[in-house]
Image 1 (cartoon, rainbow over the protein chains, first blue to last red):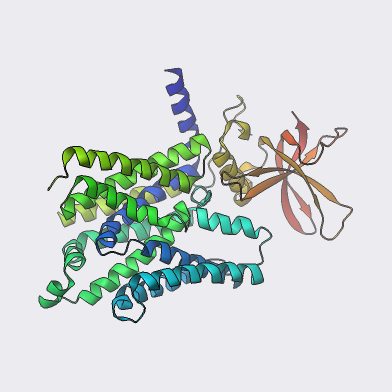
Image 2 (image 1 turned 90 degrees about the horizontal axis):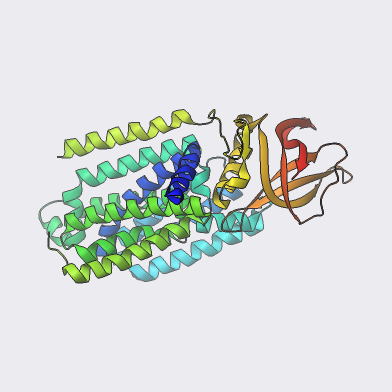
Length: 287
Length: 145
């Protein structure tokens, strides 16, 4: 009993800090957005695109750092969106096929980003900056109110996009030929999905770092698929799973003093294992 | 259905943005003493300590005049212009151990500075000072605990 009161006492002490509240608001919204689009990405066999785009975002951040931009978000968003469009829209029709293109861009952007920071970087703590970007470090806990406004606005736009275009996203996910045959512009929706994914990746870099972003996209979707089978139920379960794991990971991280990003991913791995066995027991529900 | 979800999203947006109102003028209090002006970093987890010190660097005005208690490693820094000038700092690392933040401290008169790279616990007042036309922040009137 005293342990519980101590735990909640510490938690309420930490929540008296605005930056902790910012972290929770942003963390939950980002995890919600990434899980919604994660289902589509996993089903379209683009699970690894989050990893590739996050490395591109890292490269873009390095360029912004070299150019000494005070607000690097617009440049990072622009470069990541262009790359996402190139990968998702033209990836199927080029000589270098989808997975190879993602892998090539992923390692290429990572290497160029680090090289640029090393040669032209003006930071006195290069390894710290790189580590912070790759693993998230505590950046989610050092957000300003402007960061919060940007993240919340973009996240709500993402959610509205998903709600309003749910039927189209569903159709594009499963059968692009069918949606094209019905007169709908499938390329336009692929383009919109690419833009939304790029924005989510850039936002999520603050939460878990660029090396761990894929976890936010893949684990909720795959865990939900162990238990449910329909697109809607998988999407809803994925969102709930993602939000719970992120909130739990953040709490463990700030109470236990563990790295935020890797703690959230560790919680998601445990969640996936639980979902796997839950799926074995229930046999996977159709609805 | 879509209208309801849109309404919920807008409410979420307004609710989240209302968190901004609390921002930088909030008084942070440690729980280590009854003194409300004390920020006791020794009671916080390493993740929270790093974030709190980061806040001190980005919003120093919020902490000015408060008593700070912190654990860390004693480090020495030299002035880039005048190598004779040295500054002692209490340095803490984040949970991933790749980033570090430090706060300069100036001990009360007559106190001996600790050995470099040793673990220290410092208590003093967070205050500003001017040097070469720039404003810096440090822990003044500090004592080693």
